[in-house]
Image 1 (spheres, rainbow over the protein chains, first blue to last red):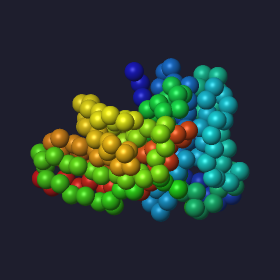
Image 2 (image 1 turned 180 degrees about the vertical axis):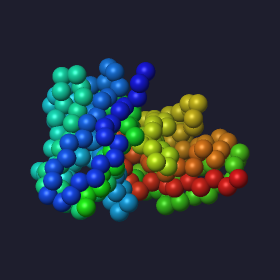
Image 3 (image 1 turned 90 degrees about the vertical axis):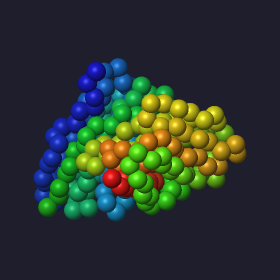
Image 4 (image 1 turned 30 degrees about the vertical axis):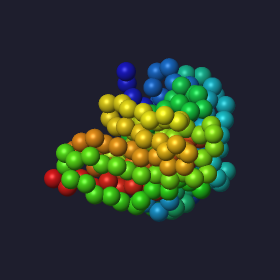
Length: 113
Length: 107
C-alpha cells in the first residue's frame, strides 16, 4: 500500500506570494491533518479535514487555509507569504477515528525569501 | 501547550535497552498515550499507543504507571537506526506535539 505522498517536496517562494501544497493520503483514509515544523516552534498542528469538512483547527492566522476533496486528497494554501512561514509542512492521514494512528508523509520544505 | 513533559535528550549504547520517560500529570480518563518518533529528514512515524495496560509491539513496549500520570517507552535493544526524536503525546481530538526527546545511540 502506498504511503502518504506530498507534492512538491521542495519549494522556494518570495514574500507576498501565495503557495499551494498537496497531500494524497493512504488509500481508504478519510482524515488528513496538516502540521508546520520549524526549529524554533517544533511541530505545530494547523488543521484537520475529515470527509471534506474541517474538523479541527490550530492557532494559525487566516492566511493558512486548506480543503479536502471527495477523494480525500487535501491541499493547503498559504497566502501573502512571510519569511517566518519557511518551514517543513507535513501532512498525515488516518481513518478518522479520534484516537487513530496517523501516518505522516515526507513533508514539503518551503523556503520564503 | 503540550500536555506532556519529556527530557530534552538521552543517550544510549547500541544493543542496550533504552527507557524513555514521559510525564503527563494532567491526563484525563479518556486520553490515549501515543508515541511517535521522527527520524532525520523524515516525517514522524507511529511507534505505539496505550490507554491503561502495558503494550508491546514489534517496535517497542509501553509501560504505563498505575495512576497514568507517567509512561515509559522501552526499546529493548537499541540500534543506530533508532536515533530519532521521540514524542510522547496525549491524544484527544488532535495531536499536540511537545519538544520530544532526542535519542542518541552510541556505537
